[in-house]
Length: 334
Ligand SMILES: NC(=O)c1ccc[n+]([C@@H]2O[C@H](COP(=O)([O-])OP(=O)(O)OC[C@H]3O[C@@H](n4cnc5c(N)ncnc54)[C@H](OP(=O)(O)O)[C@@H]3O)[C@@H](O)[C@H]2O)c1
Picture 1 (cartoon, rainbow, N blue to C red):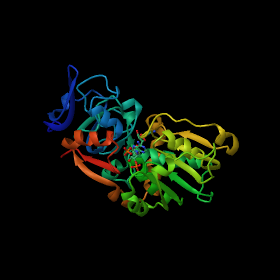
Picture 2: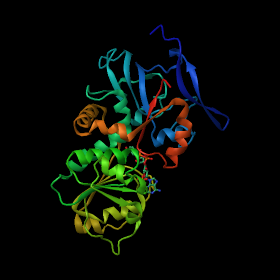
Picture 3: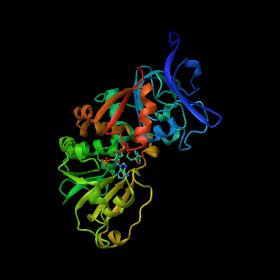
Picture 4: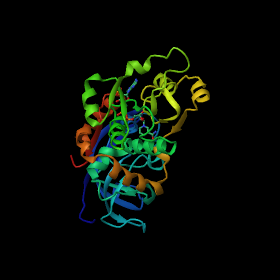
């Protein structure tokens, strides 16, 4: 490690109330004193990263800061018996690591219990094309199946916000697991792309925003992965089949929703929350393994685009405005 004299990182600084972001040259001595040093290959951008880069959201309290809640790379040295130099590792969406210096850096120092070994079948690049978004889609599939979802159930599985990162991967994942997937989007121009990912039908965002005439709509969905919340969540609950479940992932439209309890009382529908930030680290390897088997990894190329560290401020504006399609993999060497 001694030959590493300097490396690049995206640093957010706060001067009085103003935030500035730039790519800086750092040395290993600048990094925090956690026990595992990782050479980062790739990172990605999540909504939360966009907030931190723009100095919003209140997740980070101390500045300067290197954002990036997700990273994939190789262990350089470790004070933990769980990791050895050369191990390929991934960190995604961990509440415990949110305020720590993260993945927008060619090197990172992290706690051992924030890291998961990456299955051999998944490259660092693929891991970041999946990222927190894809991990959450995998959690949603596991949670819905625990609640009784099976490809034999009547109806399609609805994925809302399908053009987004969670949405794209959920469409591909559920389709390859044998489900018929209805992809809901406000961007009709990407309908064919979503069909190519494996969707069996496209539902317009407007259709889901239209309230049913009573507290129940016609039973239509075998299950749902909801990335948007708000009126769409309320309406899809009213359209679930008897005993079907909605996995509540996101709030791209709204954190609030107004609904009646009628779908719960008359159809026994269920909601499960997806909390990728607090998912136990000890169980994460199993879900990555499942992703390696069930997600058609070759589709990640179509889902993801590439960018470098200096593009992150612009990408933050876009992700906060809901204007990114699919996943963006950040090459930290660029
Ligand atoms: N629970 C967890 O652990 C967890 C993990 C990851 C992400 N999340 C949350 O899940 C959500 C999706 O994440 P993501 O990474 O997929 O985000 P994203 O890439 O920004 O995608 C969000 C999608 O939601 C749709 N959308 C945006 N604004 C909308 C609006 N006003 N009304 C209706 N639909 C709207 C858009 O899809 P269309 O253009 O197709 O309509 C957009 O592509 C976010 O809220 C994120 O914070 C939660």
